[in-house]
Image (cartoon, rainbow, N blue to C red):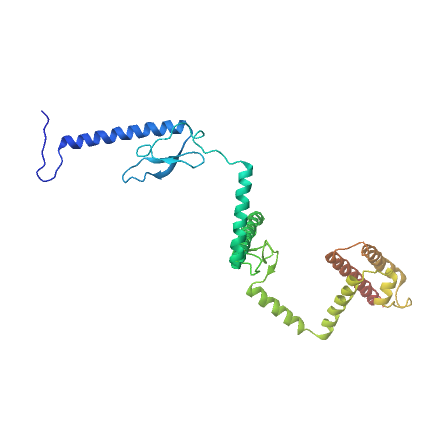
Amino acid sequence: MPFELVADRGIPSLTLHNEMLHNSATQGDSAMSLLSTFLLQGWVMTDEHCRVPDCPVPIMRSKDGSIRFCVTHDTLPTGSSKSTAPSQPSQSEQQQVQRQQEEEEEVVVAKDPYAASGRRYDDDAARIQLERREQSSRASQLIGQKMLQRWTLLNETCPNPECYAVPLMRDLSKRMVCVICERTYLTEEQAAQAGANIKQREQSTPAVAKEKQEPKQQLEHHVSKPVVEDHSTLCEQEHPAVPSSTLPETASSVVTEPLVQKIHELSQRVPSTKDAKELKHLFEAIEAGANAVRACRLVNM
């Protein structure tokens, strides 16, 4: 005879408790069996729980999401997930529904003109968000490439409003560069140093300032109008010839002839050169050669 404590104060008996545990285990096994069966039939197990309190059984649904049920507390559907799916509307029905939706939208816009502007605002916001996402992806790729080239990532962003939170990088020349707009920025120390250099150049002697200004004017002239005169005419205009009676012929030919020939070669390259930096280097070389010829002639005077 089983031992049983009858409750005078509302305490359940041990027999009743064991029966409840047995029923709960039986229901759990039955639910697991049904879940396995429906999964094999193509139904989908969701992460939602039954609406009945304390029911741990997950909700099952069809593939199209039209049917949802609990295998313990809801009516079980018959057949597979595909067979219980509702029939698809025909193409004519879809077109009719689409026309009705368009007509309803037109009526809403006519009644509320602010609805169209709000929709345009949403479209613009989505477009801006997409552009920023693409820019961030491109910036990440470029930053990775530059870091492989030993560039340094800085804790400052580009001030250009078209660059959205793009961090600046320091190249091997200690310059701050944005990888998106490719602009170069100076630090406070670099800006102060540049200002000091400019001030120091302005305080130089007039002769030195004039000597530095002449090559700059010549360079601007040649860049704006890249026409090269004959090397002999160029040397005669910039450096007046020294009388032959004061310059030994042998020393002049040995020292100046290679320089004049080099000036001529550089002058021939100018018409075919389109790059401004390369033109600058050519004119600087021509100027240096002309100065060397002048110095040789002054020494032999």
